[in-house]
Image (cartoon, rainbow, N blue to C red; front, top):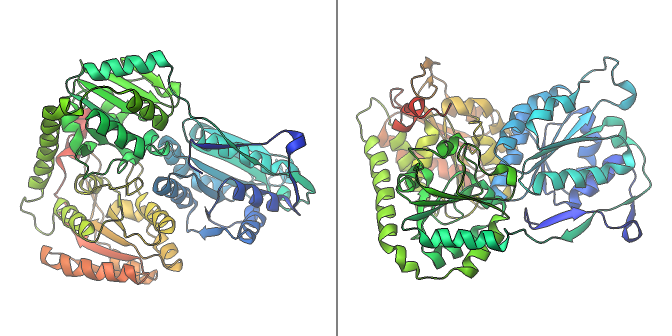
Length: 565
């Protein structure tokens, strides 16, 4: 199943198939299997015990984590690595409360996740029972959809509905809570969900014709692809459109790798491609909103007089901070296919513009590289990112994750994306730190043979460092490179706060992994080779690198002036 391509619905009453399932928990496990569950992320608790037991009985993988926020972030990482929905389960009360930051992050990123939550038994609610709280009220502002099931025999029906809400239209988090007593309640014959193929929506003919006219009338057009293009599975269609039209592409967020960074028409991430975007006379924005990540659709990223065409699956996502000249409502993959099939003209028409755009993008990389050559006392964080990214490419690449405040900018600037789901980062306007290790664990579970490298800051790593234990228990060989500069720092002119030295390598060893510390450039190459070897043997490997606390990227320094926070 691919998000946007297949939905689930119940067929008519006469066509429903029935199956004998003993309990509500068994019914939930069967329904989750039907909607495509392969791996569930959770922290066990009494309110979901029956559910987890039956999911394991269905032969599905259940990953127990150290904190509920990270269960949600792992489900998000799974979705970002696979293009499929992620699944998480949390227990009642504090379990749900702990998961809220993860839910807020995933929903802001527009990632399809189904969160199942246990809830106090119906007979005990409102009596001061342990872990009883109004969970629906708590998740209301941070979910796309929320609901509760009050009848054991309808659990499967509710799960299907929640899955549909998470994956259809503009993706997001769907939350479903089920009372503890319903999961253990007996059920008889129940209907099973049926698969239903649905068509993909495309804009009306007149709107497509207008888009083609605007595109063909431009001298310096550019395509900007966002997460909506990724969850549409639009990689092949994006490549076909840019090749038939000759229009260059830059990507942001989850769209990294939809068009290989090494493709002649790819300008790479927005960190570099944005330098060409401002010079374009037309921007086709697909699957992305005009939030702070896109600088609200204004300079210095977009031109004030620039023609903008915005394409999204949901009409309510169009416009806002930047009103496009033309708004298109439709599935990204299907719409790009329609544009390609209707395109007329020689793609070489934009040859000079492509050369200019590639040159500008290359200049951006050179500027970032020049930053890394400044004199520092220990190791420059940018130099570290550049060297690790180069070794990553030499190893045949795999999946790269960037996390942290300043470290994330270096990671994005020097890493590449070669296929969908191969380059992951803080993708939402929430700017949530600490997503890196949960993302890396989920990516490794989804792609066991891939090399997974996390480039992160020491502050961001601290949010989820205990999940190294989760990785070690599961035998997940991945590499974590920590920019250990010993300070917490916000963007722009924010004052830094010293936090002292933490030996993250020793922490990794204590939690069942491998670790090593380095403090000078010359130590990096051999230490990185040892880290890769440890990862190949199935150990989470942490390379703790002492970095100069004075180093801050020019991008982070300039955030105050950009007014993004």
